[in-house]
Image (cartoon, rainbow, N blue to C red; front, side, top):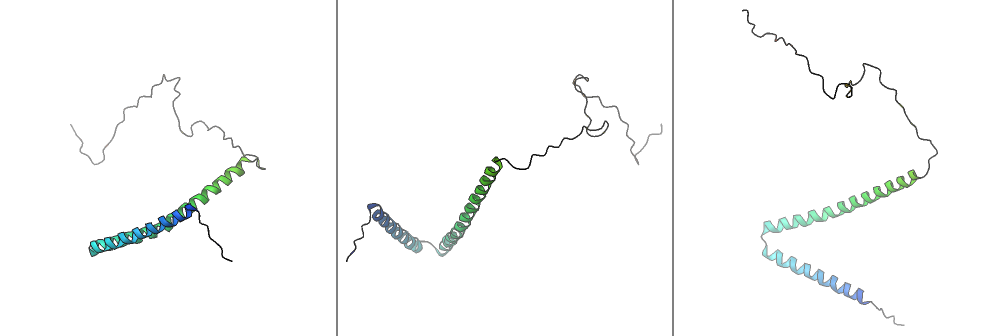
Length: 131
């Protein structure tokens, strides 16, 4: 018995476009290879090899990124469910007077910073006037 293979129109068009595209690439490669200098051709080959090596790296990076996104989504789903451990709340006592950052009380000072006192400096080893 003979079996007929009935390809759909989409499959036949896809095959034709694939063959035409492959033929176009080969023709362009031959024409470019004949017209370019050795240096330009070497650069073009290096560029093609670099792009060929970059493609698997990009695919791997995208795969790892999607995997990480799936893990984060799983964690979000698990955190949305109530956990068996109650949350821990830490209350710190107020600081003792004289410790920590001291700031002026803005309401009592009239919203003005205190004026710095005049300071005196002694320069060691400098000339002094003995008048």
